[in-house]
Amino acid sequence: MAKSAATAASSLVQTLRRYIKKPWEITGPCAHPEYLESVPKATEYRIRCPATIDQEAIVPTADPENVYNILYHARDQRRNRPPIRRYLLKKEDVVEMMNEKKTFEESDFPRVYLTTTVEEDENARGGGYE
Image (cartoon, rainbow, N blue to C red; front, side, top):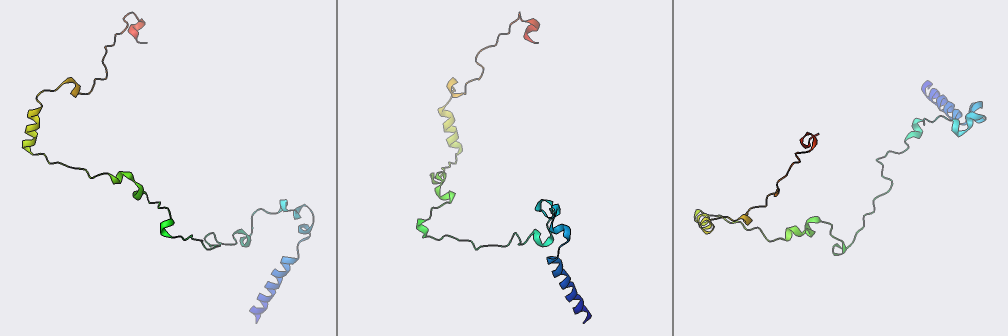
């Protein structure tokens, strides 16, 4: 009986606190919203959980033949190439290829990058280095 009276009294006090304010909270500069405390109460801070879903997702449905295919591998042209042919060379094939080509020409090799000689100026101060 004592606990129920205590809980009833505390709920009555909390209800009265909600409606009865201190005099400086009713009028004056402290009553203005700019002067109110910026830290929200625990009951005002996060009313709903961020993971709560407000609305159900609307999933569009259509006939499968009318939907654009976004799969990459279906549109990849590199996959449409013919298969790579691989050959196994036997010793006789290699010997035959070597017998066909006995000498090499200059055009068989890549060009050399530096084709001209560099002449340094001997008359420069310090031999051209400073």
